[in-house]
Amino acid sequence: MNILELGDCIIEGDRRALARGITLIESSRRDHRDLANSLIQHLQSLGRSAIRVGLSGTPGVGKSTFIENWGLLLIEQGKRVAVLAIDPSSAVSGGSILGDKTRMDRLSRSDQAFVRPSPNQTYLGGVGRRTRDAILLCEAAGFDVILTETVGVGQSEAVVADLTDIFMLLLNPAGGDELQGVKRGILELADIVMVNKADGELKAAANRTHADYASALRLLRKRQQDPSGYPKVMIASAKEKIGLGAVWDAVESLYAWRQAEGHLDSRRVEQARYWFKQELQYALLSQLDTVDARDDFERLSKAVEQGEISTVVAVDEMLVGLKQRRPSE
Image (cartoon, rainbow, N blue to C red):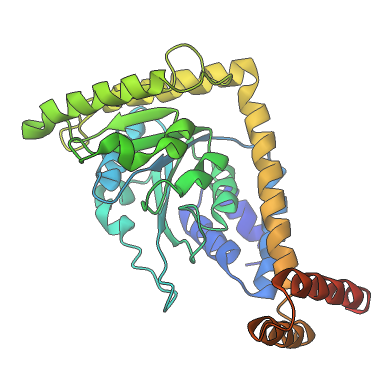
């Protein structure tokens, strides 16, 4: 199957072809990168779009349970749902467990869903380097809603907000020092803050956490891209399937408002610019992976270690060397 045939199968909604396409774009092999670029260019020209929702939260907050039951609810409403679940990669071996598909067993078996666990390959920000490209492929495959679940390691997971239209932050009730634990940074990016596990003995604690965050959000500066009532703090129980419909109503309402006001288009333009800059930085760093560059790097590293030159001078010399070699490469 050539790359255009693969693209056509993805357009027809073939989930196996979509999985193959995402595997291709996640590959770091040079020949695979060329094929991946052709595939993305082919599919991007379709102009298909979906509601992109990012979800973050600390481990144990119930992200997988929420996504599975929420996704099944959306399927009942006639929507096709894709889930991109990012798992942390080991800094030692580079491997990942990729267990999200197992945790979302019922959703994975649905013909109207696509669940794809992917390693973050130590990429910072809670997502993978190629997550944005995977979103584009899922849109080309005709999915209506794309849920991107972050690694779940804390407030550094702000990058998902630069991938999605709506950013949701999931919280545990009675997690201990809640307002301090989440910090202001990620809270300022959240469009919907959802307190999960509002059932049984934790229901009262969930209500208190809801009230605390509602008060905290009132202290934040009003954002131009938000209608009245947003950012919104909500309460739900993924396990008992309570409040899931209300959360989707809030997502649809905010998405529709941003679309009507032009904020959605401008947001995606800004995101495209951000990811162009990120990819450019990686391309420049890849120039270090040549024999001459590695030799220069080792030589300058030793000079810095021995105190012969400063770090700033070494960086300048390294950049000059890269610039001088570029025309002949």
